[in-house]
Amino acid sequence: MPGIAGIISRRPCGECQDLVQSMIACLQHEPFYTSGTCFFPEIGIYSGWSALAGSFAAAQPFANPENDIALVFAGECFLAPELAARLRLKDDPAARKHSHWLIQLYEETGAKFFESLNGLFSGLLVDRRRKTAFLFNDRYGIERIYFYENKEETYFASEAKALLRVLPALRAFDEKGVAQFLTFGCTLEWQTLFRGVQLMPGGSLWTFAGASVRKGHYFSASDWASRQPLDESKFESEFKETFKKILPRYFGSASKIGISLTGGLDTRMIMACLPDAAAKPVCYTFSGEKPTMLDSQLAAQVAQACGLEHTNLAIGTDFFSSFATQADNAVYLTDGCFGITGAHEVYLNRKARQLAPVRLTGNFGSEILRGMSTFKPIGLSRDLILSEVRRTIDSVFEGLRGTDGNPISFAVFKEIPWNLFGSLAAGRSQVIFRTPYLDNDLVALAFQAPESLRKSPLVALHLVSEANPVLGKIPTDRGRGGNGRGPAYLSRRLYCDLTFKLDYIYSESLPYWLAPADRLIGSLEGVRILGLHKFLRYRRWFRNELASYIRDSLANARALSLPFFEAASLELIADQHINGQRNYVREINAVLTLEAIDRLILRRYS
Image 1 (cartoon, rainbow, N blue to C red):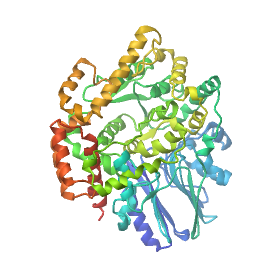
Image 2 (cartoon, rainbow, N blue to C red):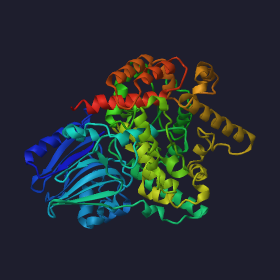
Image 3 (cartoon, rainbow, N blue to C red):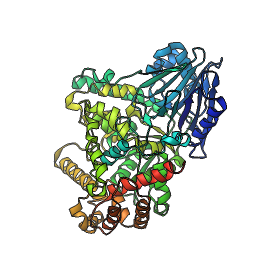
Image 4 (cartoon, rainbow, N blue to C red):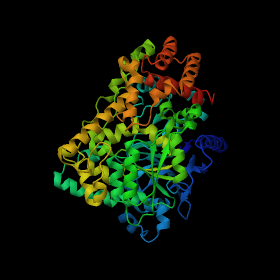
């Protein structure tokens, strides 16, 4: 994943420059990345970047004409029309495509600059006139900054492995981070999997001046959470206006845009409100070996109704033959935030890049607008885990105490940056990732939704039907929309909900006691009861196409003697899963993800 890295230190200049070069080399994962460095030895600031070619951050470093203000940047910021007019950029599209306007905005607004930023980003802004540097990230902490500090210096990077490469003392698992990972499948509260490595919380603004550092925030979750709810009519009216206002921001690009289209509501809203002036995008859908999913079928209908081409990007036989490489990529590129069951993400996004370098998605719309959550304990077999690790795991639930009761706060400030980050990070290694559902204006408004609409699809359905009546007549993958009345509608909803739940159970969470009936249950795919919604079949793949990989990899994990698992259980879970006696897909993912982290990151740089 592209990003930034740097050191704030008084050690010798040449030494710091060499260390930053090594850190940036860790962020160079693909030949289509660009990179560079930016050093300010007179104030002890050394930094660099890596970016996807053609992206917002690719033309770095950014500086004013006097070269006394410079910015090293990762991610994207979106310039609102009112700010463009204020900066006199309204008639200069070329200036808006790059982040030079960020320097201009800082010069005009000073400390208020950071509050004006909208997007997923992190950066280091150096003001040589004031001999000061500002390290900052987006409001959610999604464009991550990993850091390590001691009394003399601070190291930071978009990927943890960049720190581990130059700091040998950090090349070890963190006991608390691993316990969180084994409990929830992710780390919590800005904890990481690596000893001594931490994450900057969202909305951070750290000011470095001389030998001092002031750690503050330019934004707090309470800034939005304290907003008063609107009534239903007012909220719906403002939502429609806001969505149509912000969407054009995400279509501004010199590169071709691809819309990652599904059969759901969130991409349907994007398609219904396509900006007139936008260049014609291409649409595609991720699918399994056979493009028979509802997502593929409905997405093709939606694209056709909008006069756009549609392509299925499918899992091919090459995915299975190269699975060891695909799995290693998913783990390495995301610092272990995505496990081996995320192998498809890099693979499919690489295909997406061939169609369009920019991927516009409906990601996170369900979490923010309709209260959907997948965050819960993953329920690993306790027999697999060493007793001393189990004791640490038992204390991990404390990590969620004090969580704000507002479901939107939990989604945007915890679930998305903690639990859903891995998929995002894997995708961003290949494409320029965009979603309008994390736009500041839209998220701020979501906090004002009345209780009656916080889990309701009605506002979204109304928006689609009003903006594009043709799309309003096409039902979603959950059976919503279309003909919304009568027995036919109710039966469609029931059928879609039933098949969705059956798909989830079959593909991911088949109970232990049902595992022996796997082949019988799988026959339902042939009569279109299963396979309508989920194209990822890791549980089945681990039993069939990937069985040899699973046996060999778990044998390697046993040989490594990772200090978390009972060695005897590692062989047992392989045999029982492959033989169909148990469903151990989550256990296998956890073990092999930690094994890959150890092999690819911790021991690689030792």
